[in-house]
Image (cartoon, rainbow, N blue to C red; front, side, top):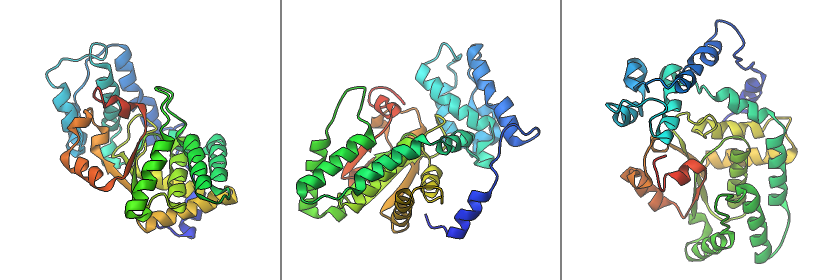
Length: 313
């Protein structure tokens, strides 16, 4: 991401669109378009196909996928596979809000609102403090990274796993064999806000402290689940770190991340696969081959990705 300081200043001065202004697209979206599928769900209406929105479906890279899953099934909202229709509802919102014409994220307001709060930035500040603590020797290097991983990844409350030591040993062995700069860590990203801020901070830590030479964020190609990460969100979070109101440490972090993005050490890769109701073993061959070829370590985020291992997600 390469933008000038002048551009950042101008963006920060712009007024944000709000939904309480009558006769605006934002107002219509929040009062008519988005509530409609929720009303249909409560009333157990028939699940509409993407093809009833022909103009939008024709522009969508994922509507054919949903049409093939739903056509001829006669699904109603309450007698259909719950995870299928839960995920499909978000695609339906995109069709109803003309996303494929405007490319305006209907969930952007919620994403912006989260970054306006104090909590994400307090959490990020604590992470930056861990990353910048000065130590010496291999054990200090490991201990610092271990603390950062625990803080950043929060642990998996579902199964209690903690493989930090194995991860560090694995990366160290790979670095001895091939050099740390050749190693690549790939995130399968989940949520914006505090989670993405910490993921970015951990990416910075790994690059700055020579744990790897490249970090890739695999993200959704279009909006889903309100808070799921898209490519624009990664750029926006890095931009937000550089605001004048942030602490010196956070601004420095944002500038480092922007530089890593410019020189190709941080890469964002959107793919429609992450938006689809599929199993992991149905991953497109091109995506599977790329990840297998490029990734030294994969950091898998989010409950929906866990679900893909044993049911469509």
